[in-house]
Amino acid sequence: MNDPIDAELARESSLIFDFLGGGFVRKPDSKQEHEARKLLAERLRHSPMLDLFIRWRLAAMIDPDDGELWKLVVKPRRKKLPQRQRDGAIAWSISGWLIVGKKSKKWAVAAVMREYGVSKTTVNNAWRKYGDKAIAAHHKIHTTSPESTLRGLSDAYRKPERPVEDDL
Image 1: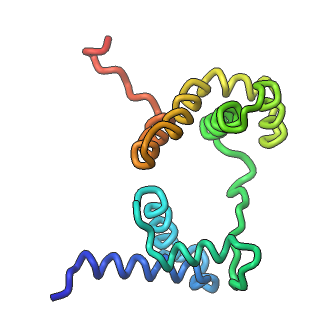
Image 2 (image 1 turned 60 degrees about the vertical axis):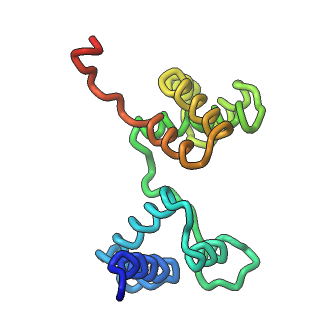
Image 3 (image 1 turned 90 degrees about the vertical axis):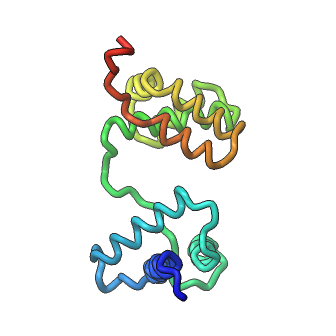
């Protein structure tokens, strides 16, 4: 007897594999390509076990010495991020340099100014706004399991909810 859940997982994996193999080059921005991209992103974010074929295809696209026809290219989707996202990313970068890179704040600010092409005032404003959350998220990564780390990251940058009357 065929399990419908297994059949759906196999269909999704096939769609992702087709996407990673360039199967939608002739039909860019199609409904199928959009679904494949969403599925891949969801699996990368939440699946503890990624299909072996998908992992190997991604690795081949990244490995410069592999003979894979397709390569993974990281490029900006647009010229500018929305301010809230940009500010969160700036704070995340600074906290990464401070905690993981063991650099001084002055060095981190200069590096982030170059990376994002923004002023020192913009970097300092972003740090004031999101620095505490970024530091907490980085500490959580280095002290917890991968699953709780992912939850912590998504919670750290979520918009604050409106206060409930009991909170007032």
